[in-house]
Length: 158
Length: 255
Image 1: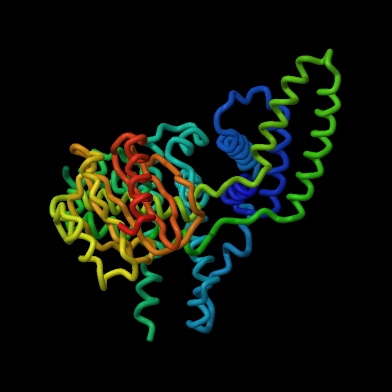
Image 2 (image 1 turned 180 degrees about the horizontal axis):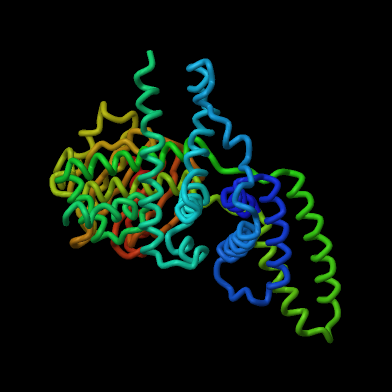
């Protein structure tokens, strides 16, 4: 359940919508229970969550805002020491992930936060395992570019 | 292997998704190519950074309650259907539904628990050690040479029994750090297969041998008294089990 919510939240980037999606996905899962062909229930559930979220995003207007906590720029903080706080670094990581293109974001979230294997990710996203690898590669390269400068600034501070 | 071929494989290596042969090929490239090695280090750090910041979102308790109560209603309905023997089709669906939902709702064992992190570390360490020149700090088939070598280097004395008659040949030892703990790595050979035994002083649940398979390797973990042990190798699981019980027996006798 936690995984379902986490994935939905990363896909739609908004807490309220994520809640709706999880509820809808669970109802769908319940109705479609006889289509469950065995295997990993978590992978099955996550792919239902993803499909539900995708349908939702298709209907949603593109200019809907993301969560405030993801847009709150920690680096705008007047106190540079403040920006070093654990919390803001977490927000920084979150914002960097949230800014990734959807196909890179979902692969990265399933791998780094949910700890799924390439095979499991491939099953949820319905893509070949090789594509999982190349998407992770692109996603990580972007994160390195986004997050590395902050790391350097951190070290240069007295 | 050139850098262009290596680049995507660095990710698979990082995620422990490579078979052993490819992992070794990638590691060889990393030891030769500074640019790729730097990239790999950056990726390792990125992965650690993400893990440390825990960017995942937790389920709001309100939603959990809502889902749980809905689930209970459905479960009651299913139980009712199940109690009616003539409803055979819904019974099958109902039972399947309950099982699947229980699988989802029951708190899942965290796949990335600390034992698994250590297992991955151990396997990485073992693979790294298989590279030329990395296997030993002390190279000897004599237990009386290998065992004393650890004196003053670790605050425990690792078991280094002579298992020649059981088909496990002692070849040496080295000092390692696993999960921020000093560990004695004792190396044995079973025919052409290398077995690394890691001993460190951290007490755990006694008496249980936990076997897992990772990237074609077997890892066996157990604890005895104040010590924890890991054995890793590409030998058959049964051989590794034999090896572990011999070591465990020897550790009990202070050898």
